[in-house]
Image 1 (cartoon, each protein chain N blue to C red):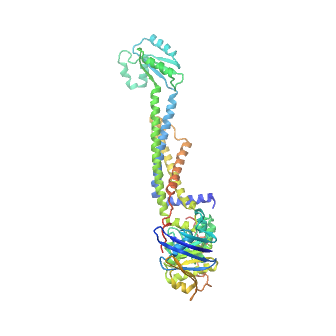
Image 2 (tube, chains in turn brown, cyan; image 1 turned 90 degrees about the horizontal axis):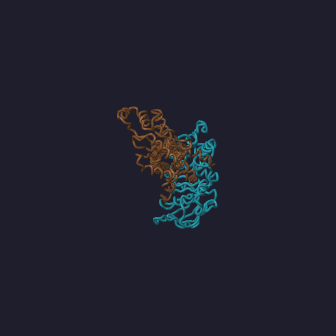
Amino acid sequence: MSFLQALRAFFREAAINLARGWKVSLVAVLTITLSLFVGGAFLLVSGNLLASVERWRGEMRVVVYLQPGMAEDRVEALAGELRRGPGIAGVETVSAVAARERFQEAFPSLSDLVEGMGDEPLPPSLEVTPADPAHRPPELRAFLDSWRRRPEVSMVDDDREWLGQLENVVALLRAVGLALGVGLLVAAIFTIGSVIRLTAYLHSDEISILRLVGATEFYIRGPFYAEGFLQGLLGGFLATGFLWAGSALLHAQNPDALLTRLLAARFLTPAEAAALVGLGAGAGLVGAIASLRRERLTVAENEPAAE
Amino acid sequence: MIQFFQVSKRYPGGQTALDRVSFDIARGQFVFLTGASGAGKTSLLRLIFREDVPSEGQILVNGRNVSSIPPQKIPYLRRTIGVVFQDFRLISRKTVFENVTYLPRILGTDLTSQKKLAYQALRRVGLAHRLNAFPLELSGGEQQRVAIARALIHEPEILIADEPTGNLDPELSWDILRLFLEVNLRGTTVLLATHDREMIQRVGRRVLTLDAGRLILDQELQGIDPPRLEAPAEALEPPGPPVLEAAPEAGA
């Protein structure tokens, strides 16, 4: 029998076993579906968040808030001083009036809050665009620190700082997802292994006959390996399907929501989806191989002969 | 064909199943293996198809030393030996066709050839018309015939039977025995274990007698009432529809 013929026979036998013992197989398939869904969900969310981080990285600025009520010429003088600093591409001045107008435009419902306060309630500010928005070289960091200590400055707000925190959150999210996914995958491998062992036990009578008539180990074990592979493959497809459905649901319900943009701006790439399905199939195969590694697949082989 | 040289078999608990057994069975012989329960008959048979290994001694089957055969070669040895058991060992969830075609499937034989082989093997045992039946739909005698068909499907060089009539009434036993004798007439070496002394006396042939694991007697017997073998088993087969067309799909 050629290898391809054998593979065809294994998968046919495995499919029959799956269909006949679907209740038991369902547990294994659902376990691997859950593990891949969780792992895939974390991958999807962290991937989308990272894409947002990358997008924001190019837009990061430093805002220097000045003391309220500062004269405009003094603001301009400070802006000129900032422009001469190291690693700074440009500085834009935002007057107190412009700051109030921006606030009212951004938060129309809170417009009254700043309207009735007499003097301009918001301080003027200087928006600094670094030469490299994504990075803060040491000389620029030192320069900005020196500005934090100046009496004309009330606060220096660097986007890079909160983005760094967001990157840490994403990395943590990814690590948690990976750990959870791996943990669940190991559980799934054990579940598939147990199901395969049970199936092998239920077929021990047939395995004895196969051995008796001259089947090789490869021929005997092949259908069980194929069954583990199919269970994992099915779990991989289901997990990818559920992830796609969840993503599509978010888009359908509120395509412009921040949550949708952050979590489901893009679905897994075909390569990622294929990797998820492949991981499921691989886990199933590993589970089957591991479960039968030390099994002789027949109970009575070494027992004394009865007469 | 089958040679035992000072073969002993001891199990881990200290039980001695065989004690320095030696004999030589030539190609085409029909040999009875007899002895009381626990005499070592099954242990001896298991050694021949390498279901077990001897503690001491050498066993040659068709010139090959089965004691030292590497594990990956065992399946190829077993494909040359047909084995029949007292409890039939048929798979109840599989049809007769599926039960008899395990070896052709292993060998990658195409479905058409599988059907042909199954038909021929079942015809020899008079059951070609039960190709699609399940074992539990058959009588004990019919189930044993299916087991024999499974053993014969690839024309083995050796046929081993362990108490094949132990679960059958005397009339059916006689039919089954006649099948073995017919198989032997076609050139297959047959080794049949039984404790039915009356059957042996009637049939005759060579008889190996074991007692507590030792070969105590190796004799040729003249049968007092040997079965008539001129009527082939096929003649027992009742008329039925063309069987090849009724064969199920392989693996179904």
